[in-house]
Amino acid sequence: MKIQASCQCGQLKFASEVEPILQLCCHCLDCQDALQTDYAAIAFFKIDGTTVSGELAEKSYVAESGSKTCRQHCEQCNTPMFDRSEGFPKLLGVMMGQIDAPFEPLPSCHVFVRDKKAHISIPEGMKQYETGLG
Ligand SMILES: [Zn+2]
Ligand SMILES: [Zn+2]
Image 1: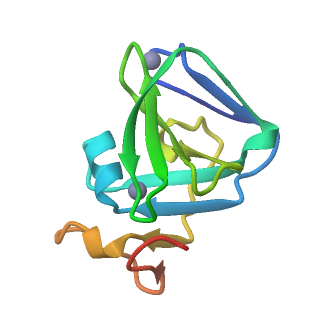
Image 2: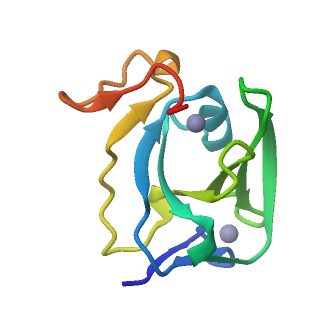
């Protein structure tokens, strides 16, 4: 089954022939800043099987490891779409809110929980990591 995502205005598109290898919720400050939300729900795909089309712009950050990380959004409607990190060059993170049905978000863990907003509660039994997955 093909998984597809697009921004609000529809010019920036993503497609993958395969399921994501990891789904998570990230509470890091970079995600909070880029998305202007409390946390980001992201599905990570192996970059090899994915296609991206359309015009995008990005915001760059420096991860604690010193490597570059960025969040990419539609140049026209500013919808946040992608998470790319130098530390994980073979992975492309896609904001789950932009993925078309029938894809069902099923995050398996929460990361950067130390940056979590106090009013956000994480479901019982969910794996949590203070920082990244390392
Ligand atoms: Zn757009
Ligand atoms: Zn993050």
